[in-house]
Picture (tube, rainbow, N blue to C red):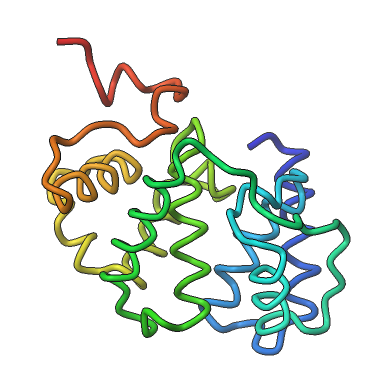
Length: 190
């Protein structure tokens, strides 16, 4: 992220946390960072959440924050919907911090799955500062998955690989991977 976009993101995060019920709670900070990044970039749709889900998430964590941008009415249909739905289901199966039926768990799994459709590193697609930020989120919520990443594979590639293996398919890239600058590094020509 460029310096100006970092400032806008950090300001959006601060505004959300100023209206938080529990501003120091790990999940509140996490959601403030994920939502704040998309508020700053004008890409709330890239969270993958419906307007109702986003409104409910905001009211649970940030009831005293006014959302300065209109939330999307609905998510546009995607040719990769099946991938996103399957990734979301896999993440919910591995959720350890919250019950899989918990609305926050469902929102996080949706945000993570949707980010796998974007054409960059997962940390950038989530609006975070680096791989360590993704590792922290995954470790808190999906530690069994993190433990399986013994070779330090990049997270988006790893999650796509785990999903393919869970479905009995040969591993391949997530839908967003081909647009990434490092696609050739992760998937070198054979």
